Image 1: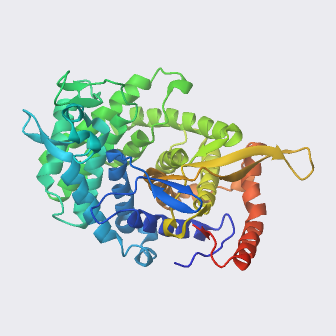
Image 2: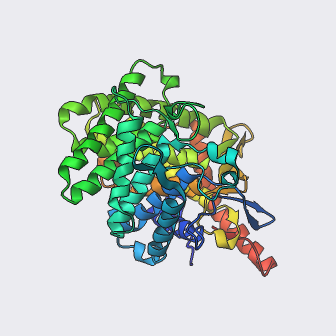
Length: 458
């Protein structure tokens, strides 16, 4: 793979990053269909850790399918990096179904279990009793399986995907539209509950999953069956909006799944149902922007998957709010910051790592504040990463870059960000990318001259 050097804010850098990230997701899956979920890098050697997360497995499938089949903005380029996708999608989907989609006692339905069937906990009676079905797992599985079935028809029985949707709408969802977070099949409370802790993000995942199921059934002409799942998604999102309507800004979660679901559902709902959802989305974006400013200005670590999720939310909703600015008055500022962060995450992908991890992103970037060349101005800069790579770091950032490409098709691309002021300390972080780009390449060249085998930039 030839990795080209571009200026820090050259649009081609995003295109290359998408290709590298897509290849990494393929290479991170083994022949059984399981991803290298968590990888530690020490002394330029990668060690796969014995940890796993079923929800993030499904999320990686979703991002891979989106990159290679559904993102129209990358259609002309993806032939060069998506040759691996059909086999990887088949293997990882089959793993998901084989390991997690199992019958639910007494319901006559299947659902998505966590942990997976061959997890170490399944080897003991106590471990098997701990099995539960998380709402978020049902949602992400519906997304992954619905998308996979559209590109590889018959890969999964649609009846099984629909049973998961029925499980969510009939057994997780309450009359007011809210969802329970878990279902316990083998121990008390023997059914739905919010223990050990209610998840703030599962409802958005469930809503998005129901929307994808609705669209998949609609494409098959099953309009009546599909309508049930659309209504479940709409009621779920409206319930979130109702619950959070009077919350203080700092209490509103950074709920990117709910915003992705909101952006997707609006075209399926009558306009009379938009207002509540848009007000909720605007409140979440307000919280996201404030959080981004703090994180980029002060934290010693920048969570890469966290930043990816924030960008997914922003790039999903900002094109809508660009046309409906009465709901959200910070469109220009939010867009210009998010766009620069998208390129900052290219820098995360470019951190040193073993050659076989080309395209993967680290879990955290290390940042520090220091003095500028004048010895007085406070500046912000990247000092490295934590040498840990989780599959969702690459998945979320890849999804963010794909969403950015879509958002560029809207009028947002006409905003002149040179006229939009960002906090000076944050600006110095982005200025540092520009100033350091050539120096980094020069150091890399010198290192290659000294050693026959050196670290490869991802």
